[in-house]
Amino acid sequence: MTTNADIETVGAPAWWKHGVIYEIYPRSFQDSNGDGVGDLPGVIARLDYLVELGIDAVWLTPIFASPMVDFGYDVTDYTDIDPLFGDLAGFDRLVAEAHRRGLKLILDYVLNHTSDQHPWFKDSRASRQSGRRDWYVWRDPAPDGGPPNNWRSEFGGASWTFDAASGQYYYHAFLSAQPDLNWRNPAVVEAMMGVLRFWLDRGVDGFRVDAVHHLFESESFADNPPNPDWVQGMPPAYQLLRPHTVDLPEVHDVVAAMRSLAEGYDQRVLIGEAYLPIDRLVTYYGRALGGFHLPFNFHLISTPWTPAAIAALVDEYEAQLPLGGWPNWVLGNHDRPRLASRVGAAQVRTAAMLLLTLRGTPTLYQGDELGLPDVPVPPDQVRDPFEINLPGLGLGRDPVRAPMPWSGEPNAGFSASEPWLPLDPNWRRCNVDIQSQDPDSTLSFYRRLIALRRSEKALLAGAYRRVAVTDSLLAYERSFGARQLLVILDLGGQGGRLGVPAARILMSTDSSREGEPISPGALTVRPNQGLVLRLDR
Ligand code: GLC
Image (tube, rainbow, N blue to C red; front, side, top):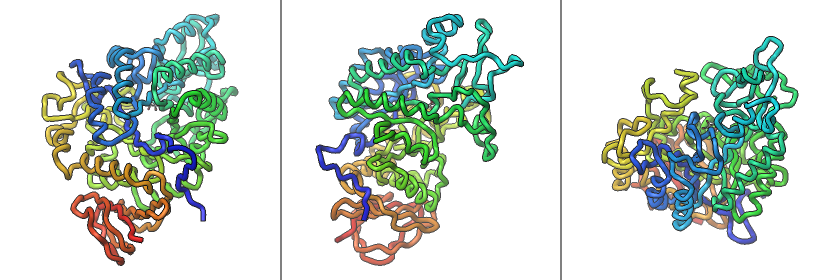
C-alpha cells in the first residue's frame, strides 16, 4: 500500500514542513509610536504573544520603502525599510529577537512590479533611449492610439498606461502605480537576485514571493480571449482568460534560479503566491522539486464549505502533488474575506481544526486565532485601491485588514491614536486580553490545537486517509507508525453519527469532551463540532 506519510530518513525534518506559519500585516498588528499604523518595534513587542500561540514562523507582508499606494506592494527601495515601519537597525533587532525565541522570519518579495516612483522606473520612463527603458514592459500604441491590446489590470481597467512624454504605454498587472518589471531582461534578473541575497545575508529565513504567476507576458502581445465562465461577482479582470499574461512557462526558470540561490544558504524557504487551479499550482514545485518549497494552496478559501467539496479538494490535491512535494493549506490572508465571515462564527473552530490537522504546512492570518470577522469600512474611510477603483463589488480588502484588538485599553491597545482603519466594533468584548483569560475562548482553543499538532507525529508527518463523508461530516485518519488519529469535523453544521472504533478524545472544539473514552459504535457528533480521536490499538 502506498503511504503519503513523511518519512525522512536523514536528519531532522525541515522546519517549514512541520512548523506553523503566521502572517502579520504589519500596518495592522501593533503600533509603537502612536501614528495609528503598526510598525516593527510593535511586532517585536508582540513576539512573546506569538510564542505563546505556538507558531514557528512569521511572514511579514512588505516593509520596504514605498509610497504605500498598494500598502507596500509598490516598492521604491528593496533594500531599505519604510520609515513608517522603522529602519534597518530595527529590522536587525527584529530578526535577532525572533531568532532568540526560536521563531523564523519570512519577508514578502514583491518581484513582479515596482512602484512607479522607484528610481528604476523613473529612469525607464525618462526617455526611449534611457539605459533602463527595457527594465519595464513598454509598447507602442495600437493604430488607433489606444492600448496595445485588451489586457486587463487585476484592480480594474486596462493594464496599460500611456506615457505621453515618450509616446508609449507601459504594462502593469495591478495598478498603474505598479509598473511590471521586464523579467526577460538579464539586468533585471541580476538586480532582483541581488535583493534576495541582501536579505538572506541579513538572516531572513525565507520569502513569500508575491504574485509570481504574473511575472511574464507572452511576446506575441496577443489579445486574451473571453472567459465563458465569468459570472457577476467575479473581479472584472476575470472576464478574460489570461493565457498571455499569467502562468507562462518562463516563470519556472526564474523560480528555479531563486531556489538555487536559496540553496546556497541553510534551511531557507521559498513560498510562492499563485492563485491557480491545482493542476497548474503543483507545477510550481518545479522540475525535480527545484521550484518553490511551498506553492501557497489557497483552495480552502474558495472551495464551497461542504464536506463533499472539501474532501474532493483534499483528494485532488493529494493526488496531484509531485512525489516528495510537501503540501500546505491556507484559510485566510490579507487579500481575502475573513474566515469567520466566510464560513460563519459557528464554524471557526472546526475550520481551524481542519487547517491544523490536514497533511502539510498551515498558514494562519493574524486575528483569525481570535475568530475576528470582516470589519465593515464606511465609504469615506476606504483605503484599499481595489475598492476605490471598483467600489461596491465586495472586492475591497480593508475589512480583513482591521487592526488587531489587543486589550480594553484605548484603541484596543493597538495604538495611542486613532488607527488607520476602523477597529472591529466588538473589540471591547473580543480582544487578546479577554480571550487569553478565558480557557474556552477561540484563542485558547487555537493554542491547544497548535500544541496538539506539535506533539503528535501523526499530525506533523503522518499519512492522510479519507474515512467518511456524509451530508454534514468529514472524517479522516492521520497515522504515523502505530499511532492512529481520527479527525471528525461537522462542516455542515447539522451534526450526525459516525461508526468509530474504541478511542479517546484528544481534542474537541468544545473542551468539555477532551479526555473522554469512546467505546466502539456510533459516535454522536454535535452540530459544528470537531473532534480529534486517538484510536486504541
Ligand atoms: C498580492 C498581494 C496583494 C497585492 C498584489 C499586488 O496578491 O497579496 O496584497 O495587492 O499582490 O502586489
